[in-house]
Amino acid sequence: MTDVVSVVSVVFATFAGGFALAELRALGARRVTETVHFEADRRRVIVRPLASGAAPPWLAEALASTFRAARSGDVVVFSVASVDDPASSIARVAIRRGLRVAPSVAAHLVVGGPSGPNGKVCRLAEALRRLPDILAISKNPRAPLVVIADDDVALRRRLLDALDAAVHAEVAAAWAAPVEDRPGLVRALGDRASAAILDGSAHAFPALGALPTGDAPTFVGKAFAIDADVLTTLGGFDALRNHLGEDAELSRRISAMGRKSALVEVPARSLAYGRTFREVVARYARWLAVVRAQRPHLLASYPLCLAPLPIVLGLAALAHTKPALVAAALAVLLRLLLSVRLHAYFARRRTIFRQFVDLFLADATLLSALVVTLGTRSHAWRGRTLVLRRGVIVESPQPHQLDAKLRPHRESSRGPSARTTSR
Image (cartoon, one colour):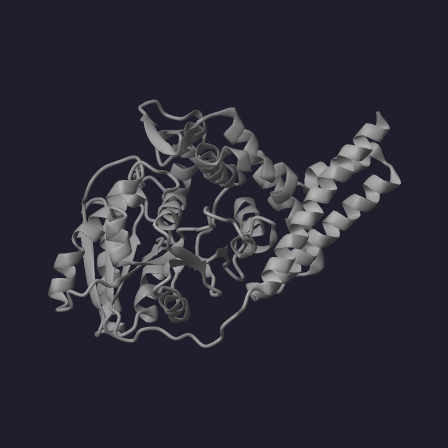
């Protein structure tokens, strides 16, 4: 029995170490261009879909960053579900203050639009539906570059210019790897777990984006740019309203039309904080639900390659043989080297011990999310229960059990005036 466990332990460690080594080599092979060149006359429309419900504490800061990052002639569009939404008033204030900082930037607030299970896509669909009128007001009807950024992203001009430069004749869309960082802020366990995944794990998107993936390239919709003509050809965001993983579906459609998407070297920095560990697990469970619905065979990569360390060390301890222990040590070492490389990519300064602990926190979080995903096809999202069937959302009228447990925490943290609506 010990021999069998030892063999299984070595196999898991080989997959874990081999995948980390492949990511290290892929990251090393990426060419970094320091000078960013872009079309100075290309009009950029920066669209920020705002989540409904109680406005998060970082929203005003994130929206203000849009105007500091925009260049002369850019068009900024904030899209909200309703005029009564708390985000609507914050967006109006951000526009008023932002135009003082950047008077050569045009800004618009889009309110309303279609309804659907994926509220973010509904906000984007309405903003893009009104885009011709917005461009007419701005006296530039030329099809622009459309930049999409979630409402928690702190935009920087360097990021916008990098996305702009990456989109050209062959590349239809460019995206930035998300990273979570609030220096000096006391972080909740959920925040640290999410940051551990994005900063230094095998699931960090600079590492995944560097790997060759054939006709299904990695694409994350936290902050990305896409050619407006390409987006129109693909049916716009209206065609994605019933997809929870709209970014993965968009990437698939871009590949199907023979175009490419590219990862830029500048990360998209998120300002989000204050999440519990359970909320972060639920968030990644939704991500894995998309993987399960669209490419279920990739789920096996999580215990084998993307989040294997708790399994590797558990099996090595159980076998307690020299081959198993050596293989486990090598796997952990390679993952730690990958973490160091990723922290350099993100310009992070963290001790080796902190990175070592975060490796196991990241993998434990992803494995917990995998267990949740395999246990159900329904997932809570902003007061709704979403069921994924072959990558398409089917909304259930019943409240989700996990969402019912999380809602009291959210409402108590938001205060008595908080409103819980869907995004």
